[in-house]
Length: 307
Image (tube, rainbow, N blue to C red; front, side, top):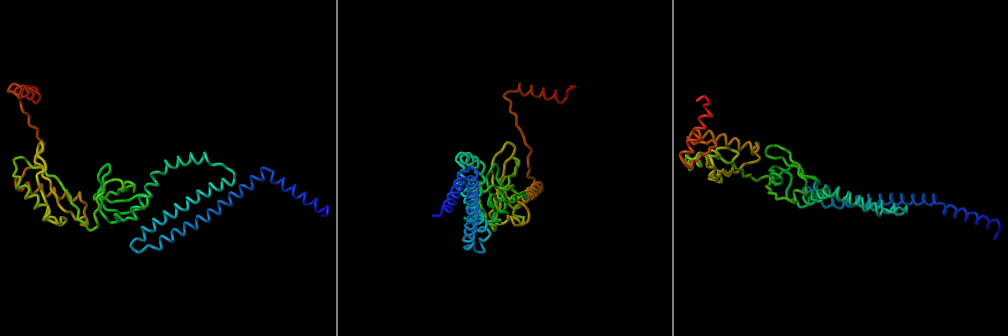
């Protein structure tokens, strides 16, 4: 072999060893390699997420296209970000950076931060997929208080209902699958109730008859043969009558307004027929005549200080 060639090869080998042994150059190569891995994983994640979304939308029809689209977007996003997270870990590993301790701390923090968010998202998938209720349906949900209204929107994280008094209530989806719910289709009637108090001296049978007839006089009351009134409770100051009737939620007024209109009319009818709605009363019973006289004296002195 030519001595010149041999010297050249030795020089090249020595130069290569110098580059490899240089810690800065070796670290730079690892950085470039790690970034290249991340970019490749990113492209691959985009392709896989797109294929997942297209595969899910392929089975959608006109009836469930919107809900399927929401589910497909969510699942494709989850797939994409999981693969992106893997890309970050693999890329840092190629760079020679150990993320073991960082992963533990970050995972714990993210778990606490996103527990509720992820719960709502997966609950939203279940709601959209199972279609237990749809937009336009009426639901009754019991939380800190009872909400009753029509569903206006179902998203991945929350559901929006419009109550009978026109308030908008935003309910986390995780709540909808963990608390008791009554559902009504958009065609169903709604049973409402109200309580009316009458005097103990009133004719109960007559009052019940008047109440039922008054309620049934309104057009928004349906299934009139099912309208009921009965004695609910013998209260301190009144006999309480509970009134039940079917209300048409599509009539154009809210339930509370319908109840108020009925109560106003019942009050008018009771006045016409001599049925008294009493004030709160308290009856005082004395054990002996002396106690009665002492109270009378004290009352007289209080109301007439000059006497």
